[in-house]
Length: 260
Ligand code: ACO
Ligand code: LMR
Picture 1 (cartoon, helix red, strand yellow):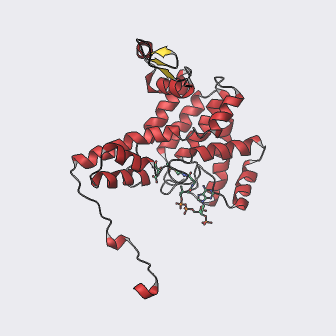
Picture 2 (cartoon, helix red, strand yellow; picture 1 turned 120 degrees about the vertical axis):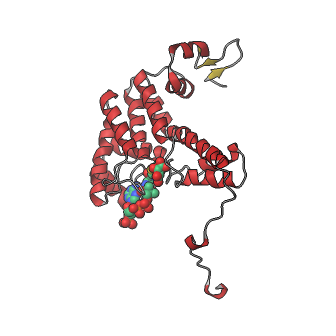
Picture 3 (cartoon, rainbow, N blue to C red; picture 1 turned 90 degrees about the vertical axis):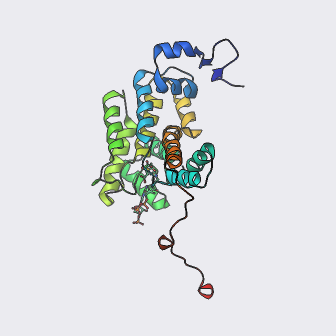
């Protein structure tokens, strides 16, 4: 069974809509995402939210895990797909792939009626990190403009945003402990994604829950950052960068005593 795209007729259908109509309506990449991921035309503010997330997550420089892997792979002479995949494989709980975990943790805490303080304390007692909180370089003193841009859009356009407001309360508590424990770009996209699934009026409560449980919330970061990884691949080839070898002075060799 398949339910997103039909290529059998004269014209390709995305979510039942012919591509000529899609182009005529100028629904953009956000509209195509809404048809192929959710099989429905979502309202313009939702499509705009998707596009904005793709744009702000498209790249964050060469030093982050994924871009670094893509660059090393490209410099080892590998092809576009291998280099892209090598970058994508780093996306997970610590880097760029905390959205699914954040959506689950925050929505569960909110749904069970835990106050933000109770949520933070419960997670600490369990010895678990809160997904979507914390950043290596961004902090209260070095704010993340990506997060600010998304926050402002959501405040202005989302009809209701209870999980986003809850996450901001959590952030107040975590940043009072350490300034880098901000609601990060993964976290803000995740809670707003849940808010739109639950409150846009386009999904039933069951559908919204199914999307959270199936692990679909990482999708925007994965798609967005692929743009950057492809850019890094082309950049390395263009700059004719040779094989990468990590410098010895950056490695601590900690072999057992007898081998030193
Ligand atoms: N929840 C609770 N406590 C945290 C969290 C968190 N998410 N993140 C860090 N802390 C705690 C650490 O346990 C540590 O406590 P300690 O000093 O008592 O040992 C303290 O804060 C300091 O942590 P740092 O060393 O400053 O954090 P680090 O720079 O190593 O980690 C990271 C940054 C990996 C992003 C981390 O915060 C984390 O794992 N967050 C959750 C996952 C996440 O959201 N990842 C996406 C990041 S954004 C992106 O990749 C696009
Ligand atoms: C990113 O978007 O890749 C980052 O927020 C991670 C980082 O450490 O910069």
